[in-house]
Each structure stands twice: as C-alpha cells, then as structure tokens.
Length: 173
Image 1 (tube, rainbow, N blue to C red):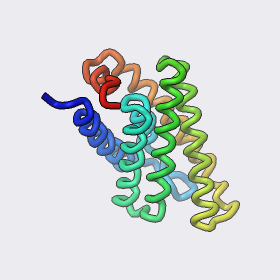
Image 2: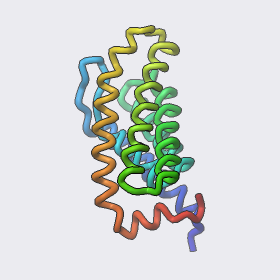
Image 3: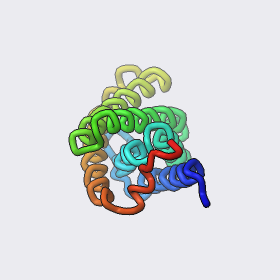
Image 4: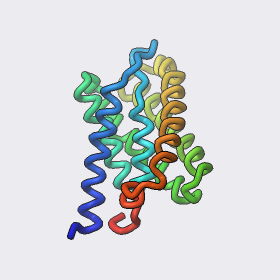
C-alpha cells in the first residue's frame, strides 16, 4: 500500500513535468521578447490540487526546468521562486476561500499579481533592466489572464474525477 505522502510526492513530480511541458510545447512570442504559454494555468492548478507547499514546489521546479530547456537560464532562478510563490499563494487563498468558483478567481488574480510583480522586480533589479522591465508587464498580465481562464476551465472539467479527489485528499499534506 502506498502512503499518502508518497502518493503526494508522485503527483507533485507529474505536475512539475506537466508544467514544464505546457510551458515548452505551446509558446506564443510576445513583443517584449518573452512568450505566452498555458504553463501558468498548470501553476495555479498545482496550488489548487496539490495544496500550497507541494504545489509551490511543483510549479517552481516545472517552470525552472522549462526555462533551462528553452535557453532562458537567466530566468530559471527567478521562475523557481516566482512561480513557486504564485502557486503557494494561490493554494492558500483557494483553501481559505472555500475551493469554489470565487476562490478560483480570487486566488488566480492573486497569483497573477505575484507573477507580474515578481518578474518585474526580478528583471528590473537582479537583471539590471531598471524601469525598462515595465515593458514586460502587459505581456505578463495577458499571461496571467490566460492562465486564470484555462485553469478554471481545467479545474471545472476535473472536479468530479477520481484522480482529482485523490490528489486533493488532505492526507499527506
């Protein structure tokens, strides 16, 4: 018999791989040099389905690996923490607000703000782009909006499945 913690770790590894794949496979270039992808939808789902801590680890690692594989290594450390924190915040808000539609929307918006502000700060301060980093804000807001919409649609599709009930089981959190 597999323990709850072992199952949660396995689900986290699968979600990290899914975040990485969703970030790599479908990329729409943005005018600011970045790209828009469905990976943010899975970042939010990590927080919602796995909970804040396992979800944060999965989201951060999956996005970091995608950055490394696609030649954006300079963003990998930022992605690890920014996307990880986005999923942690989304997971905490989602639980606190009752896991319904309102919880999805509010936690998605909170995660989007964290992602947008996080990449602005990372690009402006650590990559030394200064206020030039503001050029990435509109693209990140579009990325957040697409992520919220897709994550809500996917969550709605999964909400009655055995797999979703198994993942969100509180044992092992």
